[in-house]
Image (cartoon, rainbow, N blue to C red; front, side):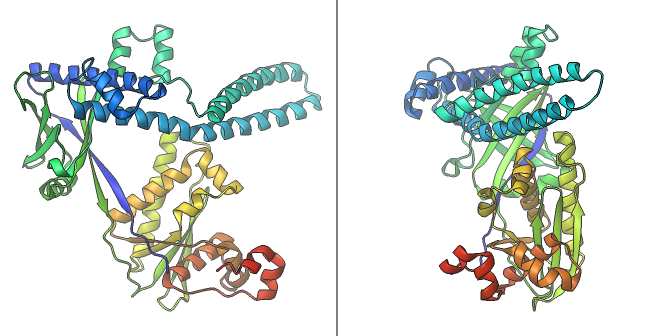
Length: 441
């Protein structure tokens, strides 16, 4: 039986209370210098400088504090890595759009519509633009580089070019955050310390790198939502590391407190286990008894997830995951078995590509892990080999399930440690290579 505990980073967002104007001005200056140093360090990374070389170059120019500069370097590295990881997705999206445009133009060419020439001309212009963009992304992918980055968002940059926002607003968007990484050996976080004051208030003490006084700090009061206070205060008492990001939005300051915890829920099977088969537009769940027999099954649909906006998509995913977990808990089941995530990330089938193309897969897995943690549901991962095929052959017709529900049935039984057996004659026909290698089912 394959079981893996999952750790998760939780981020809680609080707001800064109104503070001393002088200290706020200093905090704004720290943000400006930090963001400027991040852009500077990113260029040094492109030049091949290592962290020590780049940080030593940045300190006298921006903030003469090694930790601030190391965190800025980390942020610069993360932005480059993120862009590199997204390049294949961008290319795949464009290729899909190009294929659709070619298909549409072919249909238009054989149609008898009066304005078809005008429509074809428009689609050709769109095709040319997409092809140029795709070649640009492919060039960077082939050479291990990244496209030019625009801090402050490309949308705001376009608004600046068209004079819809002022230069001051543009500068504000490019210098509105500071980040401090946690260090357990330094009592949680060296540069930005949080301590509990009472009720829902916390004191935040930010190291002032511009002061001549050693250890001088700016002091602010942060308010977190009541439901998060106990979790944050308890975590601070442990002395474990935590990260803090201060973000300015329209003259208001948000404090993002991030801590990492491991899901300590131990799998229990007294009332059975639930199996989950994750798909581009639905979550299929099947619950089995402790002896592996079928108990209940349900499909939780995520309609229009591939066509709605990103915010709407996130909302649909969150609501669906919570609804699914509440249904599982209604049976008294507190353990969920699903496909091994690493295996799914290496999958190249059409379903996975559809999920990856609009980031649904990533959002679903993150939401699922987070929700399981909060609902005290143990999440275990099992090998997914032939789960759909076995489910279809052995359980689909017997219990009147869909192929995805049948796959979830197999995953649930695997979570209990059961091994499915398929006639060797059938395996030799359908999976000759795997059968010869003795691939486990």
